[in-house]
Image (tube, rainbow, N blue to C red; front, side, top):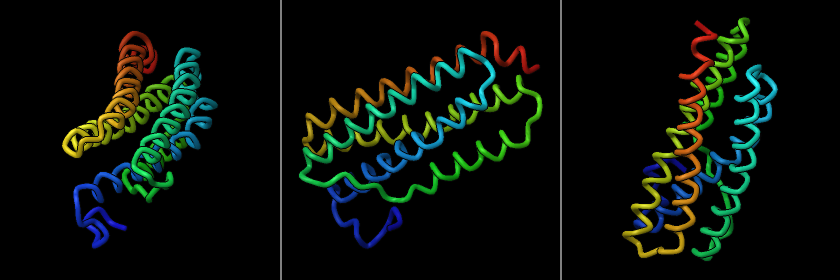
Length: 167
């Protein structure tokens, strides 16, 4: 189903579709993070990825709670944006021999994914507010706050050491 599919008729349909999109994305990220952990040579970066892997599993559980609040079964829909960001990260990481440059590239790739997630969660929260899904807002905000914190940690790590080592 595409974003402007015939299956989307109402704001509730759009909310559900976007919820399914981020659910798919979070599950894809859980599959991709172990490889990023393995490739990271900076210990803080690898540990940050490990921490975020566990956070992402918690985010999936919260999304499953949102589905339950809506009376729906948790289900993802293909998300070409997430697939593209993960594919790009794998392509770039596969082409870099210098381990310090690889760490910088991994941070850049992770931040691209974080920014996508931040956009999705912000949109979902706004729509949940409009639709009166108060408990969903609370759960989505927890996810959004974790994504923003992960992005901030990646920026600080990049700026404090990883980028200088790569340069």
